[in-house]
Length: 331
Image (cartoon, rainbow, N blue to C red; front, top):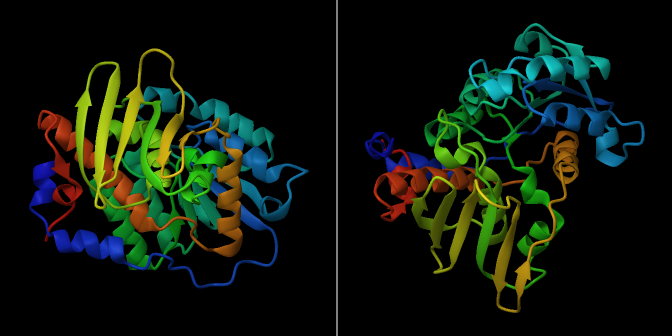
């Protein structure tokens, strides 16, 4: 994979990352925002629906309502395929219309939750949404490899479309407090999360994204290079930032598995608090659908996936350092 990217122009990659990515200019609808879901192969689909459609929802959540869903996500990943009938029935019981196609869904909604668990399908599905002019939240992983991540960004620019993607871990309360500097100037971070692997996806993309997103939320962008060592039970990725700071991600497949981080600052060493669940992310999505303002710089999202692609390249190279620039496309 690294050799494929090395043949292309580095300039294209950083043109993408430097682009002004907040493309949506239209006024949001004045009435209830009709939300559609693509992909019913993840627990996020019913969880997000229940949050948006709750009778006691307030603020931006109350302005959004899931009204339609297209069920088909992965056709080959068994843990995803097996969930589709259950979640389809659950959404139907919640009063959500089940459509026969993405085109049918797009005719009935204002915004989209792209929830398909299989990142290999996201480019094709997202491009349909972009072409229809609907803002979309693309759930993790944004794609199965960096090449498709960048293709999604190019498609969004082609259609002047709006999207954002995030793990729910980004919006845990103490993670956001660290990002805001409440514990001091961040000098380093050691993040960890469960890290199940899926052979169809670049290794950390599938589930390591949670801990890597935590790392970048705390550290911010600017990682230059990574080294990655791996065993059957663990992943350890060390990133060097351009200002000399070091951040690490530890992926867990054995022993106690949880989410969190140790944050090093100029004032204290801080342990992140508990994971706050889906609710803070759903709130951000609702606010995005209401305001049409992307809450995350898409350049940072692209860097997160370049970090994980570079980690895979480092592992393949026996743990030698790999620069993020070396896995980005070149003309």
